[in-house]
Length: 98
Image 1 (cartoon, one colour):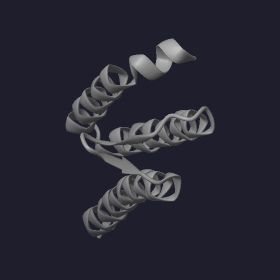
Image 2: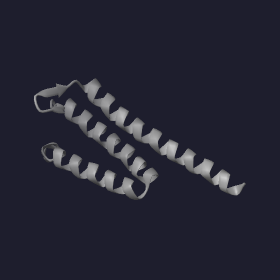
Image 3: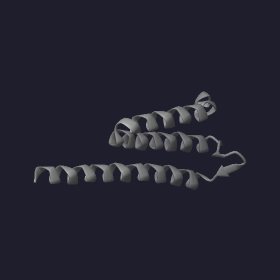
């Protein structure tokens, strides 16, 4: 698990790039992938906190509750974006049927 912690910044950057790339082609798939990504980040980060590590920005260490809150915030924002996209498509489809 230590190798995962040492490569976590690189893995997070790759994950973010993949999420952005998928989102450019399909908004809902990108949002679902983003929720999964932030869920995994929260689980791995929580395990890191249990092992005595911390997460944060250079010079700032986040408390565990703030880290989890940020992960939930990002996952929630992407869930809301997916929901809004689906609802917009339903409204467009209904108007085309008329």
